[in-house]
Amino acid sequence: MSNSVIIGQYVPGHSPIHRLDPRMKIAIIFIFVIVIFLANNWVSYSILTAFALLSTISTRIAPSFILKGLKPVWFLIIFTFILHLVVTKEGDVLISVLNFDIYSGAIWKGLEISLRFFLLILMTSLLTLTTTPISITDAIESLFHPLNKIRFPVHELALMMSISLRFIPTLMQETDKISKAQASRGVDFRTGPIKERIKAVVPLLVPLFVSAFKRAEELAMAMEARGYNGGEGRTKFRELKLKKADLFVLIFFILVLIGFWISRS
Image (cartoon, rainbow, N blue to C red; front, side, top):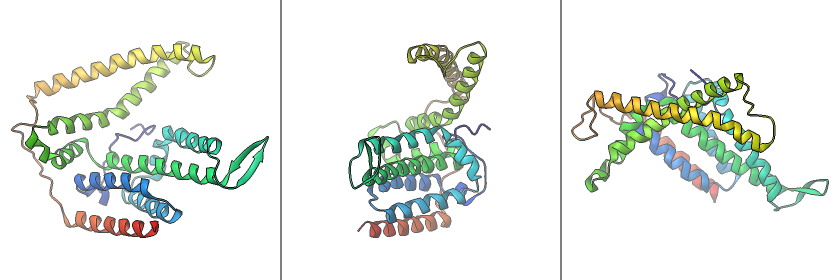
């Protein structure tokens, strides 16, 4: 399994997080994404960070695998931090180099936004790492089931989202394979003027799009050959049911939210 990107990958396991109901995991992550934007001090951020780290440890997946898989987003996190150092002019001047001032508010704001971004990517990655695409599809369909009353295509939407997540690592691996093949033929993606680099990307994008459309066509033909005709009349081999462990995790998460809310005041 390639660990260059972990978003969309599933790692089989029997950890407490793996055994949780996928609807519970999606609901907790959805609330976590909202709550993290409400944090306003180091205590509230510490509580959310501790919850994210505890969740990561509970997956029993090697931290080195997760950190290495997050490598593609490290550049964005560092760039975000540096950008705030440049544009934010709040607080006291801490460092002055060549007439360029770095403010205390810039460091805090940069750390705040970078931490938010890291925690968001980490928590959403844990969902796909510990939940099969089929379970994600069933969970989304179950959560949005009331929308069926207004003829909203819930099943098709859930299936589309699940397939999209599943094909992220596949497309990343395909991109790496094509770029290495083009580099062996003398195409240079990393050096030269910007204009030349943009031109060099064309030999990468064309076969990538061709491969993506080919995979989509093969998937459509396979689904059609197996008699797929949407969610109408379909039954499930495994029904989703909440267990005691799910309720325990829900209570624990509620306590975390209470502690978080108190820390904000």
